Length: 262
Image: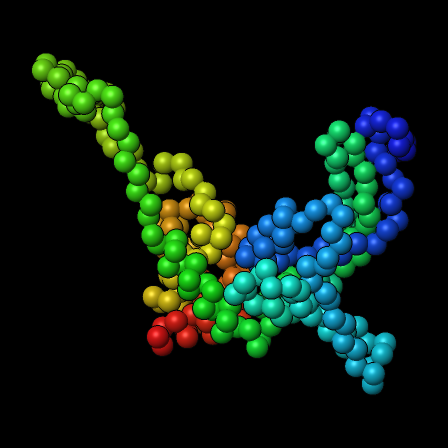
């Protein structure tokens, strides 16, 4: 594409060859970084984390000898675990990163060289499990609100005389219209991703294995959205006594078992 630095009508490609990393991180970490960025001034260059690369000197040419870890910086992270493991994806679809300014100018920021999956380090699993339990308990608290109705006589809240029996049920068509809508026919609304993860951990405290159909009924969430969460948190049993069910990955299972012990 053409390159133009004077207006927003073209794609800027000055940084097209720059190598960038793509990383999927936990919701709590993403929220912490977002709040830190919002509270920092434009001139503040303080880093939020650092990546540590460990290499086995006995196998310098072996890609499997590379170990990536991340350490969060600063005290603004609160009780969030500080150390994380970065699992590198060996195969992924080639991707590029783009940005758009407030004036509508679009720029290519680089090509994705490495893709990582960020998860709590083994030494932080207990701390991360405690954090998940706190989030689960908070998500269970329902904040009820009271709304004042201008018409305090409640005219719109009770049936008026003559309304009962207006709909006849003598014909089959009327009966069909009066039939209640099945739960499966109702459109399910997606919950907040972090809130749904907390609910999932709570369900796996109750029992270790769940079928997708059971989880859809328990959470009242769209099956496709639920699968996205399950692929991140769980493994799918294709054979054995628990065939066709999901169970937590080992790194998450330990925190749930600790919860049950409490």
